Length: 249
Length: 158
Image (cartoon, rainbow over the protein chains, first blue to last red):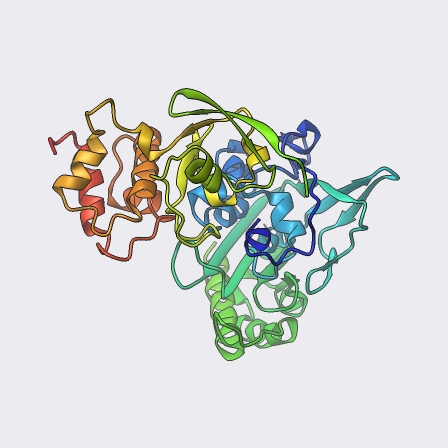
């Protein structure tokens, strides 16, 4: 709507999906919390199951715009708008989310990681819709971390956004995923940094090695909101902060 | 170009019907078609909150709502806050505390503040600031606005 209002939309025909009940609702079963694409940020903030199992998504929702935006903006829209600066994708990556895509040809389920193929490019055919977002419920002892760095707390577009999830087993990081926003052409996993931490003991996390490796995971740019140098430094700082909290679990 | 639709709304308690294009912005429908010019347009992209109204119980940026998505909705604009000639407590408090200077953000601020107090009748200062965080004011520095909302929350006479 912002692009349309500014006269920059390449489209002039629209289909209103907002009342399709098939695309609405948050559902919980034994293994997943799943979200209709039309789930609003506010719906996530108000849902006890999301607070309990996926706290990073609540923080992502509260970090997006301000209340009037959170009342209208949707999880499906946040994904399909394909901005690398969106604040829910890092959390979805950290939780290992999947997407259900539908068209008249059928349904398919894809990992969210890999869905964004390049800046504003998606694994989504012209006749396909993002129908649902499926997020596995973390099991066992979990560590959840989300931090957005912007110019102010509300109505800011991220300079750096980092979400992490770790499963801890017998004092060791058994499972670890980090999602990043605003530091690459697409929402990105920190595969190199993760590999350093995965399997490490909480008492001896190789924090500095992970921060060095993180630079292989990101390709920040200079733009109106920040500089590449600032983003790289802050991404490392936020990773360091997160690992410090993880070590203290 | 799409054909106009008959848009039926309840605005400030009154049923209204108006012919508009489906992608007309709700802020324009309110101001141009319904002549309710209390709602302001600042940025036109959901950043400033000047066009904030309540739609079906939740505050929204009316510049970002295509008319078709408001079909059948119940709206509250700043014109609906007062009871007859009697201003809403928030309006009196904004007046008393000088919470309005140029006044352009005020209609949106009042709607957001009213929404906050309905959700959270006894907010602390952080909650007031979060409740109004989608509404930008370039005059007051927010202190007098926060004072006004606090006064109403605490039931102090304006």
